Length: 349
Image (cartoon, rainbow, N blue to C red; front, side, top):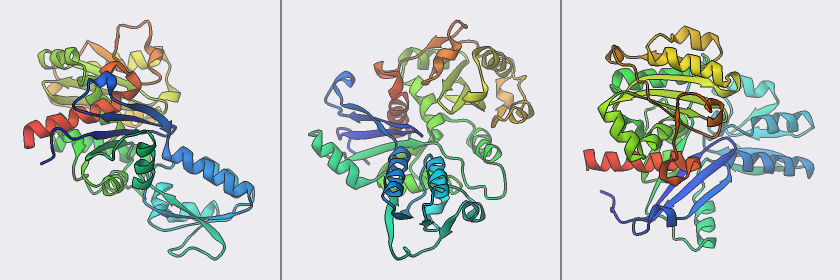
């Protein structure tokens, strides 16, 4: 059992930034330290460009992490960079080794002679120990972290594979919100497994799950969701995900790509989604991930719609309420991790 009075480092690891909340239980939320830093993938991308400009070759090793540096790497390979990658680290970029070889990456367990080693990980304890020390903060007793996980699907679409994870949550876990965070991630969530191994003690979650829990960090939203069905929408930079929620259970999930949506299109899809009339095929054929509404949603309208996320303003002017968990919308995922942690402490500890 973890101490209720320990400091907690909460990390929402995105493709461009990682949003950070250092929770200190003896302080008001407003007085706890907050940071918005470049994501680990962005830092790796910058390092690749530096080494390419210096004429160095690169060997990637370490863990499965977010592959947001893929485009920078591919362009650098086209510009003459020679690169190799350890088989374990290769999962950061693709579940298919053959695909990586086609873009010019050598997959090998040993660093080739003359190659510069670059460590891959969504969480590096050395970085955080140093960073927090520079900020005058001690290393935390507990770490909570979220990242987007597509799962392991070498022979199928990542879009299809990722939505299978949501289907499993709805069907096998009955949509119970406490099951959205993991002390031991499922075996198919390979990125979260690596993340949990890196942080040691604590919980991990998908960023979509953390966003939903962040909405429940707002007491008024949580109270209303227990009285009647509500719809929670997170409009992220890359992904838009919506949940139908009632009585501490998720009754429906829809996930799409934000770049393929505008306000009117998203609003029309949300209306169908709330009514249980948006199909999985409709979303998938539109190059989204999918949609599933459980039979338990029958007869409910889920009309109150709460929106958060960095691209939330595309729904401005529609019948929605914009949320600001903990007074800082950009830290919604961090507050969601805290919410999930508190729920699990209450239920299991």
